[in-house]
Image (tube, rainbow, N blue to C red; front, side, top):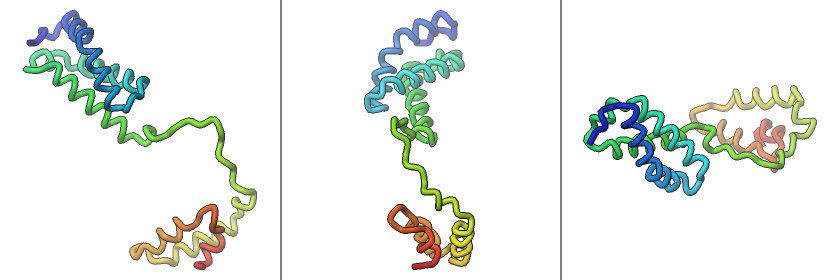
Amino acid sequence: MGWGGSVDGYGDFATARAGHLYRSACLLTAGDTHLAEDLVQETLGRVYVRRGRVSRADNPAGYAQTVLTRAYLAHQRRRSSTERSTAVFPELPASGADDPSLRLTLLDALARLPAKDGRRARRVSSCGPSTPCGRTAAGS
């Protein structure tokens, strides 16, 4: 079933499989067509680099499908895969949030908490918009 690893044979293979790969990529990405196109391009590029090995495989289409799935999973593991652009910037912190003495007080209070029992993590996570960081640092 191989194409002998030639560039012309790869072109025929890529032309024949691109539509199938794109449909699979659309299903993987829940309809994100731009990401699906990127994944198909990445897949075809990886298959091209390994075209000698792929041409000798029993199932080159299955090989390409596996490469597509692995490319998708690699994309999902990247931190940037969860970032979304927004038209509205989040509110900037109040000017008092840059108070160095407050920061030092908080860091000192956190350093006194034992790290292993989880209290430090709870204190850090409780410092939010509804709880002033100064009150959290004081331990209340």
